[in-house]
Image (cartoon, rainbow, N blue to C red):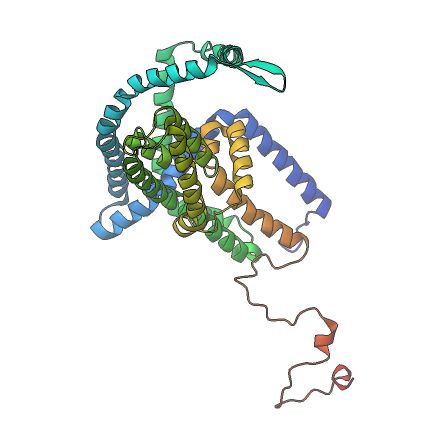
Length: 390
């Protein structure tokens, strides 16, 4: 019965594949609202699975109990960190109100002058007011669409419950999910699947583990240097720098712009230098740190597999923001790195190349005709083929 099966032709396979692809695209479009919560659930499950496996193995407890302990640890960490950071941060932010008044006075003095550039008189105050009006016109439709605060809160709670439930079952059935995915792979491509899975898993694991460590290190460095230099709101700026490490390349520019404005309008609390000199000092030190961060911290903490050119990361962040909002911004770098691995694999197979050159040892001679005329001699059995006699 199995021998008389009719095999699908190549044309039929292509048509079915295209129809399935179109159906998948339709489903993504139709249920796009569920994608972000589902991705969050997958991320939580990905982070908690190693913790659950460790607790289950070391404590010899059922897996469900290990999962509950993992969630308890996650909740404790999420509650403890703000309690340690928020009180001193709030004290600095409370002083921000007074300094904002100084900043506004300085800005008003700067905008109150008219500047003559190339015979053209520029009124910065009018330009500033026009910019503010444009921003207000842009923001009003956005904030005016809020219908009901209570409804928004209830909807958010529903999504939180959805994320927790889905992530719980993903952690609980992680081994079954892995086996099911492997069962879908044809035997001839099983080795390729394992190689791709390991590479992509390494990218995401290095990103999540390394990004948290990198953010803590950067926050500590910036806080210490900020207190030494007398940067206004040193603790707040240090925490801000750590959070901006989740926006590679782009975050450096945001922090530098903010710190430069604070240095120019407020100055240093410890160094007796003019504000503009202090601003240049902040810019110079940050440029040095940026090179240290890109060339030393990121490759060693996160890994070179996620280390992408800055222009690629910036374009990825912009594209991620347009597609998935904040979640797209945060996951732009590992997503692009994973796409690079898949793109390399597809490109290599399209042109009959080895998709894993660093992991597969070539056993055949290179495709150079001259090599075939000089085979490795075999003393036990000399060759008498015509090709060897030429």
